[in-house]
Image (cartoon, rainbow, N blue to C red; front, side, top):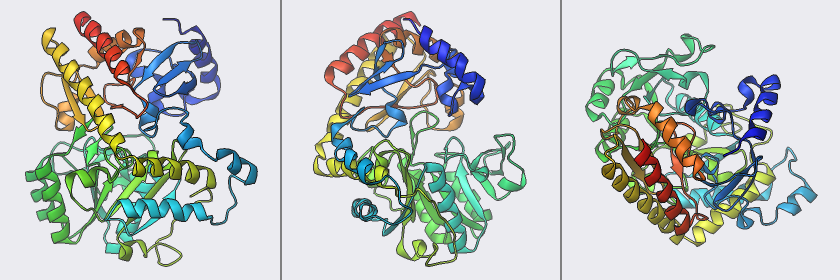
Length: 428
């Protein structure tokens, strides 16, 4: 497959943009390639600047649940361009989107729009600290909550630990109040709360981790977490930037039947445009300015363009709940076929799936924690990725990112993907 134009653009991009990309995963370094430059997308397909067409399982990392260039999502967009894409004033559409989200999530009584998932999680933690008048927060290894300083932290030598920075430019002081625990370790939770429970303002977690591949939390772990946070008066924050409106209309919290105190959103609620939001209990949310003492602001928050696309997308999903079953059934077919090929060709690999999200991990062990993920053979994934790409299948260009399906994917797409997967597995 020819990528000459992409390679030329990547060389040019490196002159002006650090690493040639505006988000690291686009650099394709993890799979030993230069970036692929997209030119257009329609439905389940994406076309690059060299004219190569792929069945796309990136879906812009989650938000394109209705596929590329959806006429449903884009409906009315011309009117927004004609009338104004930003005013610096409130608009009625912000209320409509807020109401859709509040109606869909019983744990959310009020919501504040922002412009990214990073803003949402950063603001949610500030709000939790203001509400509890405490400083410490707990996150879990392998869960990604954006790139604010206090969350760019990894665990130290033990499972109960203060962390160390995962990025240059993040000071020890910035993460001094961030504890890091092991995902899916309920016993560890008991230990942390016994020692630090009365100091914790918040616990933030992805109920389905989507940035170490796809790793769902086990039910015992989440039930224990909810019990302990209630017992110690700690704000429980679900980061549903990826899973919100994707794994079900009510998100992962609906699937697990667990109500957090604050939920962070992104991706789908903007229909593919930059967006984020955080919402929760009224008594907590009323701590925000202009009502309360916790400050948060954003000129482009709730802008008319993102709100229209989000409203269109969410309304369609609300009115067509069968779409979730369609997406999941396609994901199940992929999962079954991939597992069959893994067994047939005796490849050291496993598959994780949660609803319409899935991941092939190149390790023979069941993947439940970040430690399990760390044992994956990334070189084998690199070879697998390129073999699939040669067959017209675009997977995430990193072992530790998940696959997303959309309503635009078809049985024919899945069949073609499994044909490619069988060929790839036979060559590994």
